[in-house]
Image 1 (tube, rainbow, N blue to C red):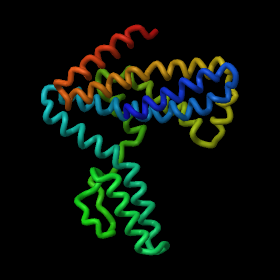
Image 2 (cartoon, rainbow, N blue to C red):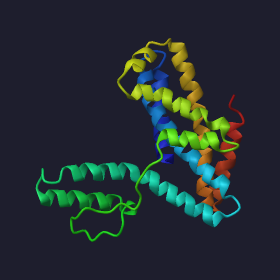
Image 3 (cartoon, helix red, strand yellow):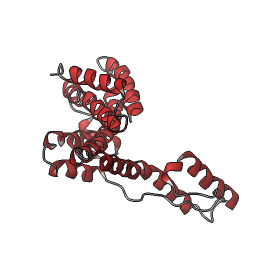
Image 4 (cartoon, rainbow, N blue to C red):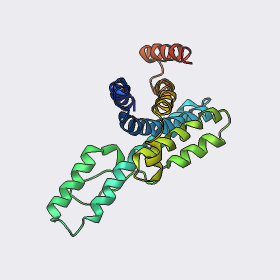
Length: 224
């Protein structure tokens, strides 16, 4: 998730510098922001788990691991579902290699696998959809101020899907587009802060993480 945030920030910095010359880059910026705010919602739900179990760090770590496996498995399970739909339509040896390669690339998402080319069994099924992530924040005391992350996600989701709202949003004034982007990007440091906080539950004595978290907190205090 940190890699995704870093890659997104790098891409946005290039696009935003181009914004005064070509406001069409707002579309690409919106696609990136949408992806990061889904990550942010996922991370905020992990922080809810941390807050609920702050007095029992062993249980906290186990709950976070289960949650992470659930969320990480979603894309893998969708790929597995697609592979299953191809059964009987492509040669079995190719099908078997696809299953083997999927497990080899994502071993933590599957039960023990013999590598015989049979359909692998995922460890976790189900998924917390974005609206479910939002409802968790809405119901959890102390997290109300982060509910707006779902609004940003929903807004920029319109960029990611063909439809009437994409048409109308693309015709907003350049100033409004830039203001919305600016407000969204200001949440990136908080996203990084919470990600660091989760890492510290596992790497409790890591002085680098501790110092990094402190620097992020100092930076956030300067944002207006």
